[in-house]
Length: 302
Image 1 (cartoon, rainbow, N blue to C red):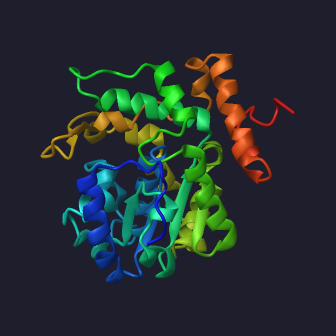
Image 2 (cartoon, one colour):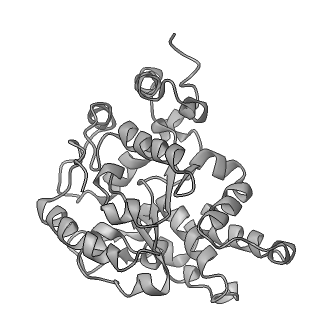
């Protein structure tokens, strides 16, 4: 396994389990499609991938599992569900797996074993705000809550649960440039504005393309409607109940759905806070085409 990201913070017990079990599991599932997603856009991408891969089995969308099961229950997490030997049979039926693990910390069997990797990127400003809201929702009431200002300071210093956000993004962007047949890099903002091209691209990439007949029959559009943020966030299953209710850190299902809005950072960040994030973005993404995906970041500074 390659050298770990120094800022990759994970509880020792989980990390040890990950190292011991991940290679063993993945060697037996080399045809597995590994969906790699950061904490922003995760739920939406899981729903889309699940609906695409299982559309033959669940052709009747009126009784589709996503209507009664939250997306995180449909696609297991490598570092939680799989390393703890939960839902390991699920990947045999639906070859989808999710993880937040940094690229350089992924098992070699994922990188070299034929797995397809899908990564979704979001403007760092919206990503930060979304992550802060999520952290606030899952922090116990009797625990100390981190203010937006404190969280920004940590985020800018690269103190994040899975390593510095910009480095995290760049590692997958570079991997996608080097091996586009193996790594698909999606942009959240593009998908929200016009999801159809990105979803068609996703289906093609993971080996489940939509046929001309399916498109003419509206199958693609029905999946887009089923998996839209607006639809998912308004389903009872996603407004009530908890994710992993048996665990010590059960999370309200509603915590995974907030606004899904592009540019919501403007309602939270001062101009100075936004510029600080943009400055880091310019420094980190300089010399790449990544700046074209980030609002305002390429309109300031030198």
